[in-house]
Image (tube, rainbow, N blue to C red; front, side, top):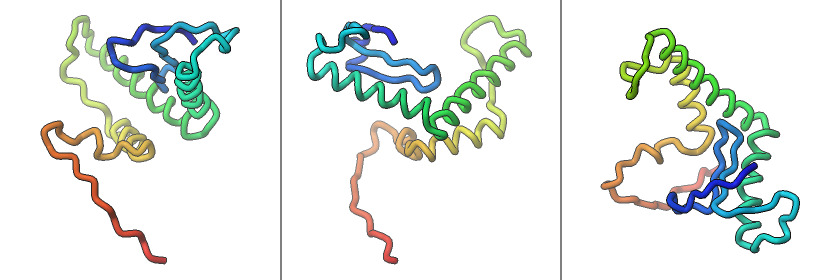
Length: 132
């Protein structure tokens, strides 16, 4: 774990599940967390829990495998087509990768949320509970 200055991103911390990487916007000493403020400890604990979920649950490991498969497929495309400059154009993920990405979005709870256009109003509605 290491310290990255991410103030410009307006975040106190983040966790990248594809690379098992915590990013924190404040310096810390891993051997002495007692010197951290309560807010910093809270942020550290929050991001560390993401790491634990990612490395100790079947879903977390599956999610990492999907990420690495996407990288591998994209890298193979770059190598196979001799691409040496950015932006990379013409890449289309395989149907298998598209299915896995869709499954990962569904399982992560992101389905439909990220595709909402910024100019559309955000409507929160109460839904009926299922009767059993």
